[in-house]
Length: 151
Image 1: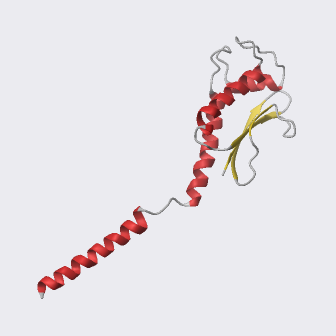
Image 2: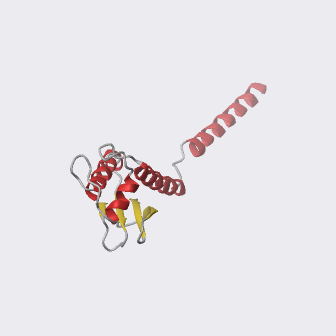
Image 3: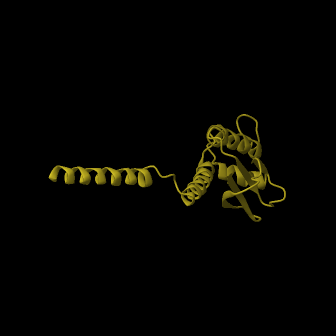
């Protein structure tokens, strides 16, 4: 009788363990976490891009190149590209090596007027998107850089 009682206790413990594994360990990630991760990804990608130094352009940061792009366009890099062209090629390379490889759709804009951006990369998001906008001060107004990650 005692052995039967011990067997029933062991079976109940096994069933409880199966439920714990099924509902706690194997559950899929929640949707709000996915949105937070893509929002943080947009913020971190844009922040890193703006602080990146252009090696072949007097070690100027992308922020400095964008400021020149929106105003004087007086900077010419070692490879002959002006500030707008060089910034676009660096951004395209960064996004190709990261977001494109991860199969993530995105849209990157640098603008003073949203209707006519100075730089536009990627495709416009058709559905849900996570955005991050960084303002860049310039002498006449404010320039904005925006990264939308679709999904």
